[in-house]
Length: 152
Image 1 (cartoon, helix red, strand yellow):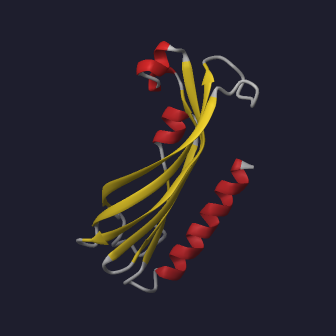
Image 2: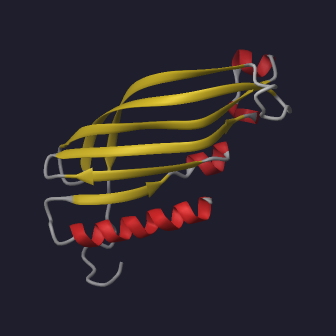
């Protein structure tokens, strides 16, 4: 299922970027996070859309696991782990230059808490709750092959 989703998203991103390449005042990008698969055993995808002065994004993380060294404090002392079935949100921002933008980003996170080593079933779940965060993000983008006229 994940492979099909990734393939679909790549195809969609390629199609969107081809269409938008003709219109220089608008850009689109599809991103995949590295922190989520490397540190949290999950997956993240983000879509960005840029106009001349504005930036917009939507991101969605799936199946994030806070365990091992990512658990600290009281949770570690109580041998708890957190499973996030999803973490999602959007951002809207202002472009200072073609490569630098500042975004306001509200996000919604779903936490499910379990004892370390237990199966992640409804019967074993200790508690579940949602959190909402509001943050600022300063983003830069770099196109190393921007001047190339081929696929790169």
